[in-house]
View (cartoon, rainbow, N blue to C red):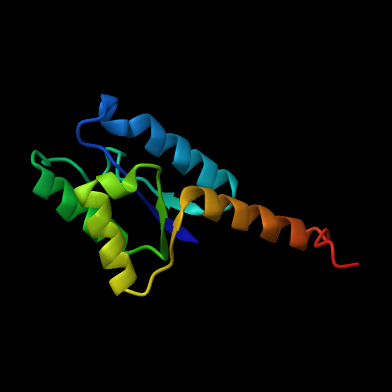
Length: 116
């Protein structure tokens, strides 16, 4: 599943990029296709918050769901991304829930569903 990562950036050390890249690695390891707004691709020419939001919303429109990082509710951009995703009927869950779901699906696929 292609998942957009939403979370706080502005006002945090390194714009919280380490948390975004860590989440992208975790989602990829769980079998998802993460879309990380902290990546440099597609961000050339971005200078203002609005520039970054325009690029991020284009990414969001191509995703199947949204993974929320801790602190997302304190971010104007992440709140907007969450609201747009919901308006598009995309599933929106905390990162931890996406990871637990992927783990449960992998366990079930291995036959370890525990329903014996």
